[in-house]
Image 1 (cartoon, helix red, strand yellow):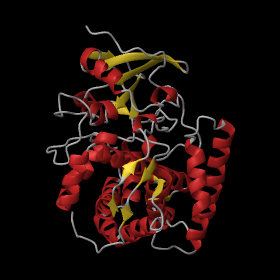
Image 2 (cartoon, one colour; image 1 turned 120 degrees about the horizontal axis):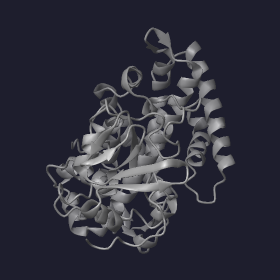
Image 3 (cartoon, one colour; image 1 turned 120 degrees about the vertical axis):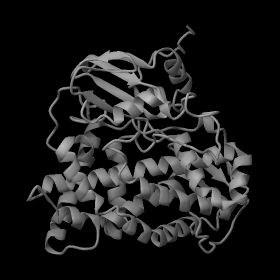
Image 4 (cartoon, helix red, strand yellow; image 1 turned 135 degrees about the horizontal axis):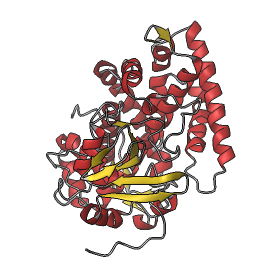
Amino acid sequence: MNELPLSDLPLHDPRLYAAGFPHERFRWLRDNDPVSHHEHEAYAGGYWVVARHADVQAVSRDAETWRNAPSPTVDVPPGSPPEATMDILINLDGHGHTQMRKVVNRGFTPRRIAMLESLVRARVDAILDALLDRDGADLVHDIAEILPLHVIADLVGVPEADRAQVFAWTERTFAFDPEADATDRLTAAAEMFAYADGLSRERQAAPRDDLLSIVTHAEVDGHRLDQRQVAAFFMLLQNAGSETTRGVIAGGTVALLDNPEQFERLRADLSLLPTAVEELVRHTTPVLYFSRQAARDTEVGGVAIREGERVLLSYASANRDERVFDDPDGVDLTRRPNEHVAFGAGGPHFCLGASLARLELRVMFEAIARRFEGLAVDGDPAGLPRLHSNLVGGFASVPITWTSLKPKVAASGSR
């Protein structure tokens, strides 16, 4: 057996991801200990990490054995009851999850997503047009984070005048800054919750054609959602719908610049955009993991797991599994098939916003390929700051430069 790559930090410690996802450590786990046990200061029995693609899929698709409740993260110890604000979609199972998902699905129908394309293109054009008189920017803050924040705000129904404040709450709630105070995070969440509650009450009196109105007036099992549930929906959508897409835009652009032959291939043939998007999503995998709790005694990959124990499904590891992907650390914009698990690995909790994310990414990467000349990262990507998180991976900042930025062009109509 090969020697485990050294690290004094446990897998749930955000500091372990300060230089990017530790692919070497997880490669060792896939080869030598694919369902491994780890201690946690808040877990009496620790937790298990599932590193291989096949095992991640098996757990994800068995909703009878594996539950999301009380939370799909390692912030809530196994067996703990959900907190008052936590009965939201990703924390629910069974009938409750199915009914809630039907409600939110109304805002993500293929027709509604297709109608958003012109709006997404306008947003992308505006973002890049704002940089026309410059030759450098921060890829994260000036480009990547702006698009998904506005698109989700458009979908949910946040007024333009309120968006800067909502975006600030989103950043503080996630606490990606290692210096962030826990009290500040809770305060931001409480303020955002109160804002969502007020906006929902407005929709009660005067509904509009937006997702918040849909959720506010929806019924589950014959009953309206209460204000707490509606506000929690708002927070989930605004947070989850922005941070992950931002990570793929930033990380995917860096990956293209690290693989210039692939980037030039895309620039020469934009019909590659659909497979390119899937490959860049696989390569970046912004959501590093979600967890499940065993509803009964079971096993994963031949390893016995007891009822109540928690497993972490490492999506970032599964998406680099050599048993599934040829040259998994490389970038191949024509990769087919590409059964990545970045949107989840199947089952009832597959990402509800996957189609919206794909639309945003396709339009943004098309614009980057068409409009920038001489695009480059200003510095070594390996040394750039990362998000302080064990859940969401990605760059915190990426300085870029370019030799020219072309005016916007007509939509290509590529899919």
